Length: 277
Image (tube, rainbow, N blue to C red; front, top):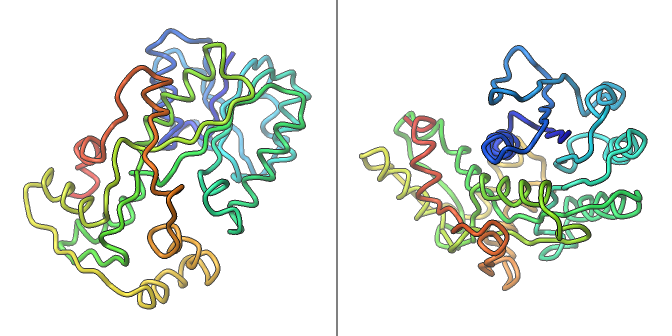
């Protein structure tokens, strides 16, 4: 039995589809709302909430391997519950910031979760992806309203990754040998700037999307309302204010592990065009 947590999310939903397509199983998908979950045929839907670790215990019963996204609840309690349930292997989604920006608070939290897993006695695979292509959904409302997308650092290109590529690597780590006690930094196949991302979305929509670069100060004022001061600074550092060679590096980890080319941002935009219409 493989349990996929966050099964309705960008990575989890793609992972369940891949596992089902490759004949892995039995499969179980964890969701807070079974009534709204749409899983592939044959996937067992189970209810659970990261905020209530006790609710995860029925979902963990009989599970051999677990897919887990960090910092969605009390990771220490979740890992302990998995250990008690007899889970043998955990594939954890952490963040590339653990190695590129270890001084940032979220990176330190991810590193703590990684160490908790390593100390658990279960075997593990840690995935450290870079910026998600799906972060572009932040602009969806603006683009649907035909308003101007305003971003700082418009021409800083990061090797943005398609969430389905994270899922593909996770599928291999969950079902094939040779990936225990391995940590993988994951990126897309090329650097893509915010300006290029909006251009790709405009192409699939078949219309112009107004775009403007703004200052860090203006972006910080806008983001602080939703994220708070410290988190806004961290996001701005990672999108262009404090980039380094490690963060900008394009890695070939995805094709090496999956034997398939890494998906481009253009592909993600084509697959998600309806979100911007």
